[in-house]
Image (cartoon, rainbow, N blue to C red; front, side, top):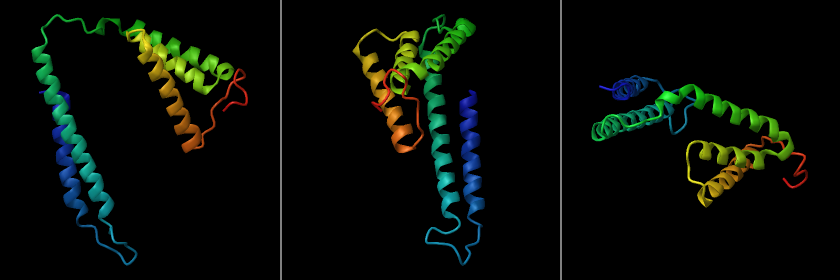
Length: 158
């Protein structure tokens, strides 16, 4: 049995127990139409859904592992050099961010990580990098109001 399968079963049991125990919460005079048990019940359902997804994933991964022939290279022997490579990519990102700005820096980081992970050098990587950078910019700057560095190269555009 895998750890994910055991974790999923345990989380499913916890969500059932949480649902049962949260049903005993008494409503007060300040409660609304949802009641005092509304949020705990929703949380228990979310936990149950996540537990079932974890169980299904564990079963699918188990089946996939049995289908794959042993001796396949999974790249697990390159842990430290790979981690150092990611650390260097992050360091370069932090260094160039004040100069080229958040959007361009994030696009370059997404493209660099994709290419470092072995993605083919085609337009899909460029589209994912540009789209991801714009999406993150819109999320953080426009939706959440977290200002990101514009960069001295693109001062005034964003």
